[in-house]
Length: 336
Ligand code: SD4
Image 1 (cartoon, rainbow, N blue to C red):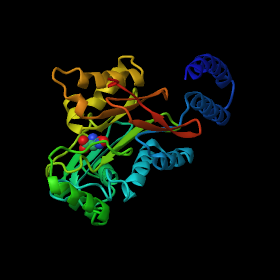
Image 2 (image 1 turned 90 degrees about the horizontal axis):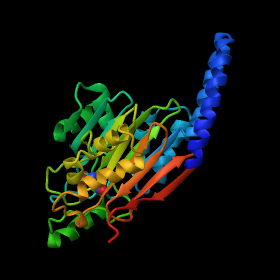
Image 3 (image 1 turned 60 degrees about the vertical axis):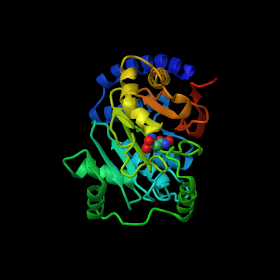
């Protein structure tokens, strides 16, 4: 990263000077071509396009990168990337196959945000696998930002989404086992794969993000987490960067976590520093119960720098940048 920063500064100065004088002396088609080559050169230096996501989701980041490499935009990339996880019935924290609430209902929360600051979300959505795509439809085809419950479902069906039973045998069995003791302690982050939050920068340097989840396993009926709350589970500012959250949503909502991370980057913090400070806001509260819950953030800035940080160990970020799709183990706060 340090090497990239150095090359970036040195090369961009050179590229800028050369480009300026060349553009003054050529016709329009040639100048367009040169501008295109110029932005490709800058993208290479910044490691753009790029995709990052919460947890271990290489198939999802690969799908998103496929779209970016074909010249697609960041919004399509994050939507399509998240859909990979939503469709995977084996994943018990997102979309189809998600663990249900205490009453046995699988309810989904999702959000999406684009480079213009437009956003859409759905909360307590039932019987529709691709909550992220419904959130996008809310953003693009309604005058609203958020639709809930039965209204969200009816809207989805009116847009051609299929109604299906999302409770798989495996999730039903897990719920029935849980019911034997029925402890109201929500289970969180015991798996190595959880809520997916994804951020992408496309070849134009534009940023979008999305977040999708079945929320806390065995939550109270009607509970909504951070993932569909713009500013909590997800926030994008195309001039600055973006952030997504995972973990105990209540704690993210209380600190408006993703918005906080982006604002900290605006003030000059790197994505890594911003994620660390946002986790600090949670764990440093008087009487914080942080030993008993996990929260993790993943962030990216306009320059293609990334960061991630969590309260406890075993959080990771999947990053697809410079042709490498890899899992990065997050640093964490609680080393006691
Ligand atoms: C929620 N933040 O509903 C989600 C759940 C999650 O890792 O991310 N779990 O609170």
